[in-house]
Image 1 (cartoon, rainbow, N blue to C red):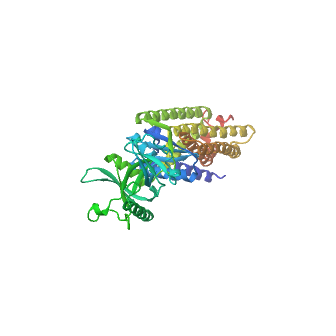
Image 2 (cartoon, one colour):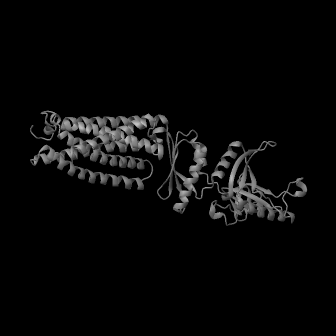
Image 3 (cartoon, rainbow, N blue to C red):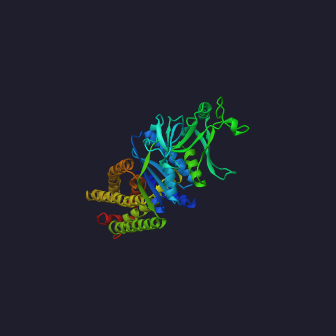
Length: 474
């Protein structure tokens, strides 16, 4: 390769690496810190029963909407494997509230009341355990949310409407009574079904069926309210539900306790019901202080390792050690730039495992230089000149580096797709570092060594020169 091309490659690698670093520093862009470095809460939710991939993806989307509504800064919600959902909430203040809202199933149904079983009845029917979609088409027995299973029970007909028809849910304060409720708006299909359903119940009321004319609003297997259709004759002007019309407009409300409960219920109903049941299989809490200490320890270990590698290279390879020094500087600048850009654009977070991956990648990069320089020694021992040894040796060394880095990158890719949690961060940073190592080896290392071989002062010096480092007499 001509010296002019070497100079171009060398200049481009320096400008791109250091220029990218200067750009991210000037714009204030820095790598995002993960949960274990910034502090916060991490949760792994595991789906129960049989789960289809599309259902799990839908669940991830609903959870992400709920977290966004909570105002958590830069959360991470991702599917892990076939059954797990990883949630990271960095910097969250009330983690218990967030976890409760995230995992609330919020299976909302509207059912006709078939029978009311008071607490005084000795032989009570068995309470239905199923609460999800599998129970929508069945008759069920659910307790009242106010009394529990030892109190009033309701035998209910199959669900007529589900929470899918909810388009808006808002917490509302009654200005007269002072109580809180959740106002619900339905879509067009839900409004039409709601009108037919309430019309049917109003007709049952007119026939004297006071129990069967009640509509039960059920949330996660508990009856939140079971109100009957008010009679127009006693409800006053403009009030009541007629047998001929029902309730039009697709609006209703759920009476709840306090303001906090109303707002939480409105949030989970507004974002939609989770289509599957989730259980917390792992909860991790990290304080910001512990995260900062971990980050400082990681940087200290990385700086110490980097310093020892550079010192060894300078003592053993002499002038070639300068190539290693500048190459590691460019490698670090490029990796920092990539992590900062991906953090700002793709939401990539740097975890402690990712820091470990970066430290390991420093050793891999150092190995690349050792492979190249030892190959040069072999070429020099065969009797070639310095320039000829560099041309042939660096070409062969790069092929060896490419194969070795391919194996490392393949392992990182496999680990990334099969692992769960922080291990994926290790695999991702290791894979990115391996890719950068290949580019540095091709554009910078080959060019720098070739130009170094053409420098008489750096190549022929008795103590520091390249020829002496390769074991060739000056």
